[in-house]
Image (cartoon, rainbow, N blue to C red; front, side):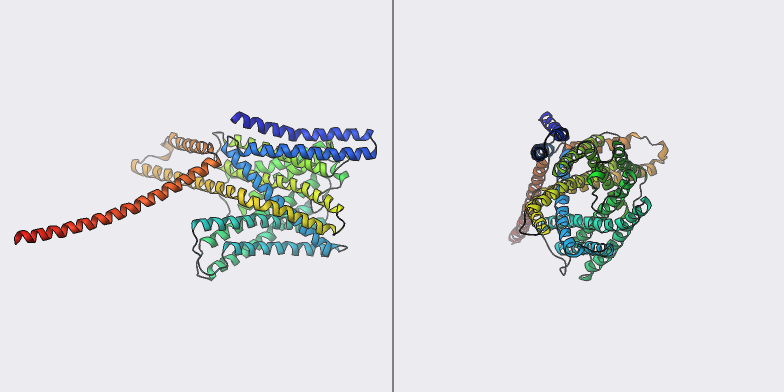
Length: 560
C-alpha cells in the first residue's frame, strides 16, 4: 500500500512537470503554420494541458491525503485549505476591485487612485473587525453559556470568516500600498521603504483595534470570557496574516526591481516582453533571495530564544511569504523566458500553476524528511508549519491567476453586461460553489490538526518543566553541580519525545477521529459508572443506617 501511494505521487508530479515540455513543443511548431492554424493549435494545446494537468493534480491530491506518513497527510490538508481560501479570497477581491475601478478610477489622477485604494483597504479592514466581533458572540451582553458542540460550531464559523476576510484584507493592503509604491521614484531604496511603511500603518491599526476589543470585552461584565478570548486570539492571528501578505509582496516587488531591472505594476504583473526578457541567471538570483529568507529564519529560531508577542509572528509571516512570492515569480520568469517566449495567456497561467504546485509539494516532502531526522528539534517543526502555510498561499495565488484569466476571457464574450459585472457574477458563483465545501469538509480537519499540535506542544512543555524541576530537586538533595550531571538522561527524554512523536505520525486522520470518538465513549461510560457508584454508595449508607436502627431496636427488646 505504501509503495502504491509513493508511486502514485511520483507519477502525478512527473505528469505535471512534463506539461511545460509539451507546451514547448507546440510553441516550436507554430512558426511553420498559418496564423489560423497556430491559433487553433494553441487553443487545443491549452485545453489538453488543462485536462491532463487537472487529472494529474486531482489524483495527486488523493494520493497525498492518503499518504502513509501522517505528517504528509497533515501538510497536504493544510495546503489544500490554504489554496482554496486564498483562491476564493483573491478572486472575490479582484472582482470587487474591478467594480471600484470602473466606478471611481476611470480617467482619475494618481492622487485619487491612491485615496480610493486606501479607503477600499480601510473598508475591508473595518469589515473584518466587525465580522469577527459579531460571529464570535462578543457583541452580545453577558457571558453566553454554550455546550461543547455549539462552541465547536462557533469556532469553525469564526475561523472561516477570519481566514477569508483576512486574505481579502491582505490583498486590499497589497493593492493600496502597491499603488503608492508605483508613485514613488522607481529606485530600490524608495520602493523598499514602502514595505516598512505598510507594516507600521497596519500594525498601528491593529494596536488601536486591540484596545477597542479589550474595551468591548470588559464593557458588559468587567471580565473577558472564553468567547471573547477566542475572538481576540483569532483576530490577532488574522491581522498578522494581513501584515505578512502585504509587506512580503512589497519586499519582493523591490527584489524584482533589483534583480530584473523593472518594477512590475501594483498587481505584480509585467508586460509580455518584460516577463520574457529575464534570463536564467536572474531566475536563479530570485530563488537564492527567497531561500535566504528561510535560512535567516532558521538561524533566528535556532539561536534567538526570546520573542516579541506580536512582532515575531509577523516577521515570520513576512519571511516565509517572501520566500513563496520569490518561488512563484521565479517560476513565472523561467517559463516565460524558456517556453512561453511569444504566446502568454491561459495556457501559460495553467502551466505556471501546475509547476508551482509540483515544486511546492516536493519542497514539503523534503522538509518533512528533514524534520524526521534525529538532529532536528521542536523549532524545526515550527519553521515547517510556517513554510507549509506560505506554500499553500503560493499555490492558491497561482491557481487564482489562472481562474482570473479564465474569468476575464469568458467575460469578454458576454455582451449583455459590462465586463466588470460579468467578472463579479462569475467570481461570486465560483466562491459560492467552493467556500461551503471548504468550510464543511476541509476546515474542520485543519482545526483538528491545530488542536492536536497545541496539545502536543503543551505536553512537551509540561514534560520539559517536569524534567527541569526534578533535576533541580535532585541537585539540591545531592548537592551535585550541574556540570557533573550526565547528559544521558536529558538525551533519553528527548529521544522518548521523538519516539512518541513518530508513533503519533503513524496514525491517519480517520484513525485519530476514531480514537477520539472511542475516548469520548469511554469518558461517558466512566461518568455513568461514577454516577452508578454514587447511587450504590447512597443506597449502602441508607442500608447501614437502617441496620443501625434495627440494632438499636434489638438492644431495647433485649433489655425489656
